[in-house]
Image (cartoon, rainbow, N blue to C red; front, side, top):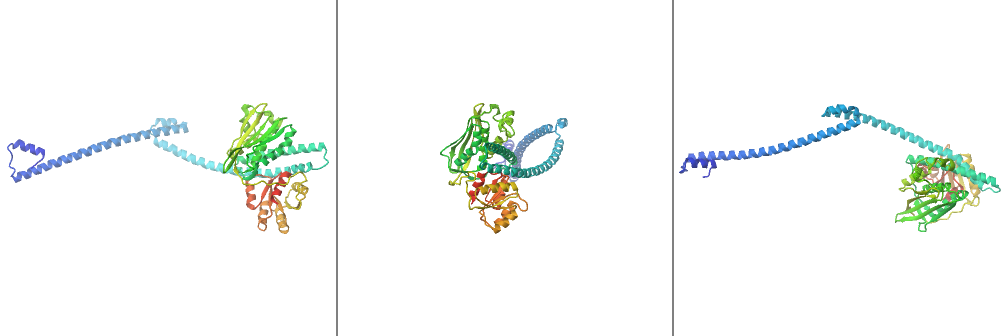
Length: 500
């Protein structure tokens, strides 16, 4: 029988000749002792193994604790550094106490309280700013209407006088000066109002079909007289690959190009101003065009090339006095292009001229060309067309009625929206020219009432503001279009022709 090795060793030592293996009691004793030895050794191994594992875990826990303590220490140091930057007056207190975590927490609590108070102040300031912006917007809207209303009468009257026969050269010159002055005033008003709208983020872009080549030729015609007065030649260079129509905001494109052309003419004498448009890229969805306005004028110094795009800024102090201008035109151009994902670029040489250029994307259009009657003074014909003119300002009524009579249109008048509704119920009109702001009943309300019983008569809004809010409201109430005061005969005739 095999016993524990210690028992076997003792048996061999004390019973060299062997022991009586038949002794049952001795064998049971030896077996019991051997079993105890085996159990002891097994428990010893288990104990040693457990101790080894515990010691390893203890070492790991200790090292992890050291790492956590180091992270905590570094965190406290960074918090203290941050607090010292935020509150230098607390620097000594935090430096003296390395583990002042309670002080840090107290300080952070103070900051939270202050930040909440600051947040409340900011919310209150934001509300005040929003109210101020609303008041500013309403003020600009009112001022736009009040300024444009008399200006509409002035420009309209000048347009009417231009077509009178028998005027001598002196009177024609006076009319020319009055026309240029009133247009300059209108340009200044437009720049100021547009700049304010852009600051408020209220500029949106329409999508209308633009017959781009005709559009650019019309720009040349509109600026030709002023160019010739300064001895300039005004040219248009068009790429034959440009599509006949593109879809975009013709008003904003006209504003950008008119500003550039006006500047080029203003700073050029006995020279050349060239308007260029070429096709840059054409895809299934978009067409990208390159526009350029170049002149042979006075040029701009290199150190002023970026400065001129800042608001109310000219290249030098003498320009405003000698040439006029608000210093807003190029700023507006820059912002209008940025809002459309483009950028105005410039090269210039003093004494040789300047070149402004940009790329602009438009959507493709499926529109086809349509020919409208030519407007030349009183030779255009609206014979057989009956128009209801809804307007409360006497000067505006006089100017619009004279223009319409020159084109042989039959004109009926209503002094407010309520009278207009009654007249449309009782009579048939081919078109309604509806002022927006009127006493008793405004143009929006009148249009809503008219659309309840007459869905077909074209209603054109007469507005003194190009605000996108006014345009959207005009569309919502059922108007078919709008014309901005002051309007010229071409614009008025064009919109009437398109709608009758």
